Every structure is written in C-alpha cells, then in structure tokens.
Length: 363
View (spheres, rainbow, N blue to C red):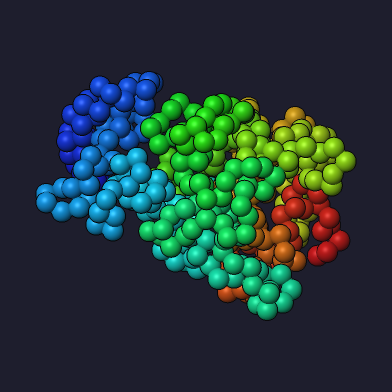
C-alpha cells in the first residue's frame, strides 16, 4: 500500500504540474532543450516543485523564512536546500538525519557526515578532532545545518569558489542526458564557472535500490577523473609531484594483485570471475552494473577508486579511513560511524592493499 500511495502521489503531481511546465516553457524553452519537462528528465513535469512565482500559496508564504523571496525564485534559500527536499530521504537518501546511523550507502556517499564533530580515527584521534567539513564536499544548505567550507576558499587543486558549492555545482537541475545529470562542457551556475571536460560515462543504480554489492553496483565506464579535474585540476598534473596516479591504466602488475587479493587473511585467494570489490571500483567500459569480474590491464584507476563523490565518515571523503591500521579500528577514537568492512575480518588492513598488497605478511 505504501508504494501505491507514492505512485498516486506522483501522478497527482504530474497532472497538476504539466500545465505549469507548458506555461513556463513559453519563455524558458532553453531549460527544456532536450524535450524534458520540469523536474529533471521527463519527471513529474512540475516547475513549481522548485520555483515559486510570488512566494505565496493559499495566502501564506512558500518560504516564510524569506518573505522577500529567494534567488532564482526558489522555494528555499539555496539550490541544495531545494534538492534535498526530495533527495535527502527516500529519493536517494543522500542526507540522513544522524551521522552515526546513516542511511544505506548506495554509492555517492552521504552528506550527513558533514555534521560530525570528529572523524579522526588515527592515533590519538580523540585528542585531535577533525571536523565533519573535512568529510567531503561542503555544500551550502542552511536548512540542513551545513555551510560553505570554513577553511578552503576554493576547491583543492582548483579554483571553484567554496561559497558557491552545492548540488547544482555538479548536477543539472533541469535534466540532461548525462550520467547522473552531471554537467558537460560549458558554463554552469549562471555562467559563473566553466567546465572544460565532458561528463563521464557510466551506469548508476536506481536511487530506490539498496546497498551496492559485488553483483549490483555502479558501472564506471570512462571519464570520471577528467570530469573531477574541472574543479580539481592540479591533482591531475603529475609532473615531478608525488601524487597518486589517476586516469591511468592499472597495468599488468596491479591488475594481477587486484584479481587475486581476497583480504589480509587471504591475500591470494580471489578469483578473476568474482574479484570485483565495490569499495575499490575502477573504470572499465566492458563491465556492466552486474559484473563481478576483476580488472583488465587496461582498466583505469580514477578519483572514485578511493573517494566518495558526496561525503563519507572518513577524512577526504575516503571510501575507507586512510588513517587507521585495521578497518576494525574505524570509529573507535572519534565515535563516528564505522564504514563497513567488505571482508568481515578483524585483521583486515587498509583497502589500499586491494591494488598494492603490502599486507601479505601481516596476518
């Protein structure tokens, strides 16, 4: 009955909003250049799910906290506040309510970790706290208690202004044909910043699916690191710098390790057919979202091999905590959420070993 109610709800929105979209498109046709209406790609067709003409509905303000209205006629203070009306919860679960009890992880990470007071699980981490604004992308969403990064004025390795960072810095709110509606080449956010690299290619799970698993996960085809370089370009220039390579083929040696590593306690026990680990993904155009196969020599390491796109309970949005010796130590010093250990083994060391196997003699 719950899902029937949700379906009926969206059909009602579609019927009410289609006329709105038809009216809006008369003047704002450029927003719908790909034949899409209102909320994203052929969604409920409802402009007024995000915008309000007069900040008034049935005699009361749509946004009572801002009686004079918001920029872009938004129904909330910032674009991210608007996005999170739908996507914080059931439609994506990208911003939970409790950082120590986050929603199921479905790939991108969760912004709720930005609210943490300490995510440092390294040695004496309780005495040297690392605040949640280091957990990932510090989006500007006052309604959720998060603000612009207080330390970094611009994106690390680049020049994107921190005070402008939000959901719509990466995702096109009016919809496009790209993976996760990511922007391609050109201006974004009222032409205040420009992307020079195209959107990546991939296949993502529905936002209604549960946790990623080896046989059901995001398929990363190509172009992810190049796209991240739109804002973090200096991390991609390796000339003479001690920077971990990205956007490069794994090569025979690393591929052989990835495809045989099955954890600290079983470092040579994996099989090529089932070697894929969602916690340490790679780019591979030939692998679909149900593939369990390991890497090929031409598979590529990317930014998302080690980092979540949104945020995590580890510093630098790590897919695992880079500061702990054993994954079982995650969350102990800081009291923060312990990221799941994919090997379910108390002896498991850093997931860097999935590609480098430096824990061979540590068990």
